[in-house]
Length: 138
Image 1: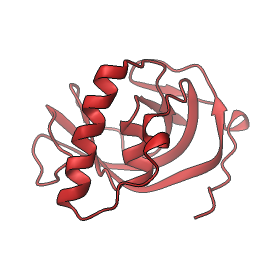
Image 2 (image 1 turned 180 degrees about the vertical axis):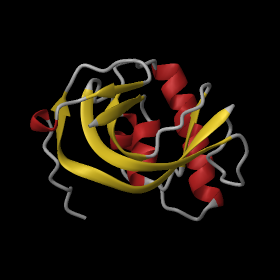
Image 3 (image 1 turned 60 degrees about the horizontal axis):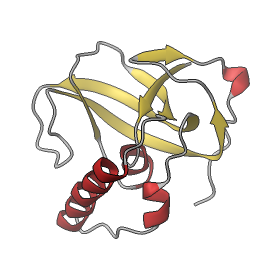
Image 4 (image 1 turned 135 degrees about the vertical axis):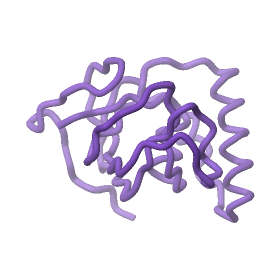
């Protein structure tokens, strides 16, 4: 299955806060379900700045910003869920869109356990046998 690395805290926003656009500097024609892999990159200052943006968007959308510790957790190098990519756009009314390209996302699924996997740039393949696809209890 294809996977996409997303750094903290953006992976959390995709799986837990309704982030319906993943901003990228490159276009994709891929459509379908992808695994969400937590990138190993982590910089406290930039992650805190990104967290401020997420909190602002959640406030605008009247979504409670719970579990701040999990938002900041690096979880570097793990598959933590999946999401479906349904389009790639260059503009959107979504408050989450602020990139050159936006992968339009839907139906996020958080996994009950994270699976350590080495990531890569762009989409990369992960064997199904390596991932625990059990959904997290809501």
